[in-house]
Amino acid sequence: MAQRVQGTEDLYGSYMRAWQRMQDVARDTFGAYGFDLIETPAIEQVATFVHGIGESTDVVRKEMFRVYSGALVDQLLARGSEDALKAKQRLALRPEGTAGVVRAAVQNNFVPQGGAPVKLWYAGPMFRGERPQKGRLRQFHQVGVEWLGASDPASDAECIIMLMRYFERLGFAPESLSLSINSMGDAACRPAYREKVRSFILDHAEEMCADCLERAELNPLRAFDCKNAHCREVMADAPLAPDNLCDDCAAHYAQVKRYLDEAGISYVEDPTLVRGLDYYTRTVFEVEVEGSGVGAIGGGGRYDGLMELEGGKPTPGLGFAVGFERIALALQGQGVELGGEEPECVYVACTPDQREAVFSAVLALREAGIRTEADYQGRSLKSQFKQADKFGARLCVVLGPDEVAAGVATLRDMSSHEQVQVPLGNLSSSVAERLN
Ligand code: AMP
Image (cartoon, rainbow, N blue to C red; front, side, top):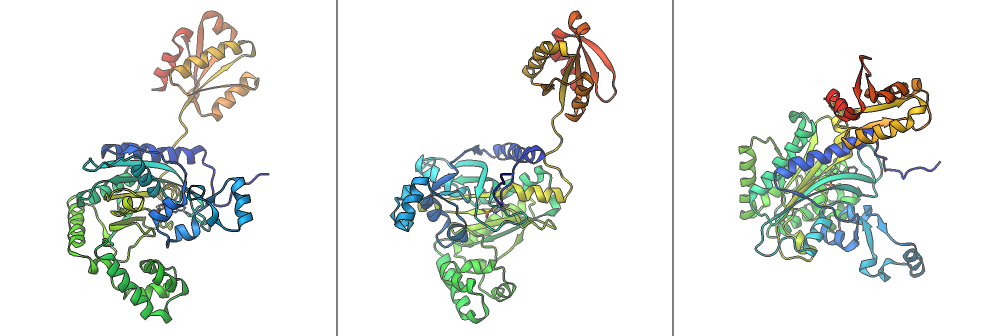
């Protein structure tokens, strides 16, 4: 039997409905804030992710799925290295959504000089070659937003408020949501801070793991996230970002917090929150669900240098992404079934000689927008009733020779078993009336 790839899932039934519901709530919630839907390709040039996410990040170094056509694989094998390929031949499945949306914004000039900010949201699959475990997949689904062209701290606060409202509308108990925030500084103050953390790690080299020593050179701030408990203990004494902000970054961070306070959003300041992607500047945030055991369900931040890294004009920006699979798990933990019930339907049953009458009745009901099922396997009337129950039909329309001759249909309520006859010409409206 063919098997699906490890770390991927088939989305169907209530799981698929849950994914659709997440998108519906996103459209409603983000729409009210002026965000429009965008869809960018699932494959991009590797360079888009390298420039955007950062060469030193785990996502780029270890987790990106590279994509080659069969002919290119032969070339690669013959030449022994990817270096011989042109940039446009080096492709990867997107590990996250921001780099692609920002690439699209640069390429299509979404934010012309002096123009208004653009607000976009997206939903789709992302791919990372991680070791699969609970809440960590190799193909997972994200909903995210990007707000390009906005520098005001109000946009940071509004983005966070919108994210928290989104989680509440999905059904999370507000008190279970834990929002952490931090400021990572900008091009003016981060290099010096980064250097301080690098020196700190090197001063404690004998106490840190090999990965952290590598991080000291590549991306020292990531040492705050080390899985090794001892490294984290050592890092507890490391210099902290909020103590090393320049005046502008400190003022921006203070204003974001004032807006959050004004909106009544509770948050915890976590001075060690650094997030995994290089592009963040100033505000970063992450949300966890207490007791869910699935890690962060969403996070994001400001990335004022990213448009430039992708070849555009200097343009501020910010955004966040949330993970569908982790949200579904965390909601289940709270007893919330995001996928809900299957939509109700109507079943049209008949005696074998009336199959053609069913054909037109089914068409008419569906034209009226009513979810309608019938038999396509030549079942007996009794077996059709059983099947109607299986479909969870609320109503059964029965067409026998007497009904068809008299131009009527029998409507059978599947729970009370009450039956009434209605004119065939009014079938759709009679059914719709009973469903409401
Ligand atoms: P990130 O882009 O790493 O900040 O991830 C944003 C959100 O996507 C996380 O908070 C998770 O909910 C989700 N996510 C990230 N990586 C995975 C993964 N491998 N499997 C499932 N969900 C993920």
